[in-house]
Length: 414
Image (tube, rainbow, N blue to C red; front, side, top):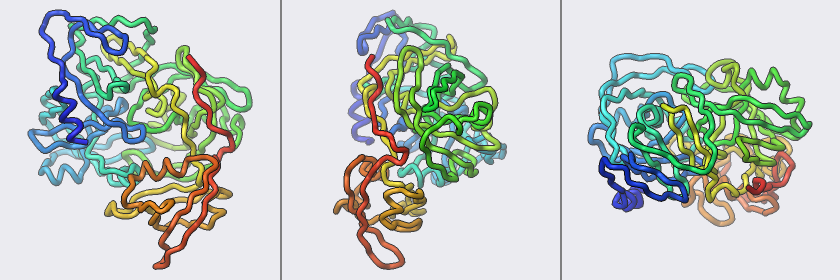
């Protein structure tokens, strides 16, 4: 990753104070470009590299839902970064203790951010489900000062001085509601029952799913009575590591502006605290949808542009195995964390705690967790899995099919 990013940084464009028009994917940016930050997608997560106070390169998530800059406790210890005050910060489903460390300098690409406060928190529980070590998350520290374009066609974040740019785009601008450090837009959702609801959704590139319905909205609209097939489990997620129930189902449609997606996966949260319990919000819009647009976000002007990109027609993936997988604490083994009832995995005989050794003859140690998940989301395939259980090795044959019983379909044409 770092070698590819180094090459991309060589291509950095520098601009003088005068207004110079440049073409980016058919859109015209006029002056004001101050930095281009390369990124990579890990699944649907935006991974960038930055340094803190001249440190080595660190792997962070660019998260439009991150109201503060988070540093993993593990990385803070390695870098000898400490704080003086422990505060409580709200996560997805509860509060989490965060140690504040003030006045740091962050360098991300050619962009330098000074006097940044870091919130030091444990992220190991997120890492294990994510499949890679995450050293932190950054979002508001950039969004609050600059206009930002997330360009997925070029895999780069373009950062603009809001005093010196003009953005000429044929596409319509949409109102962006800014509530504190939370960004919201309006969207509409359709369910199998025929019901259609509209509401505000949080723009959260740090959420790797499609849409997560908030608990008050789900209860007010009685969403469980509107859905078709579904499956549920207790999950531990977010900064707080609190558990809550999640129901996964299928939306008939999701619409933002003139853009509609059909047969899209969705999750319904039942959390008693945290961001998922906020009233007045329909849910959290994640990067499995956002990545299909080159997003231009201007917090100061409270405006967002959506430009469909090369990922717009990408098919949605669904759980076709019935397995939920995590890494072990040492990041050496892939472990079965959950097996859904009546799923291919349960029918084949897999159990919680099984270690995945091979998939179709490929060693699990040679694959990223995200790659393994993709291999298990291929409807109609037969997959042979070698597992270790209590010292014995056993092969299992899985006949993959979507757990929610509907075939994948692509978004409707533009």
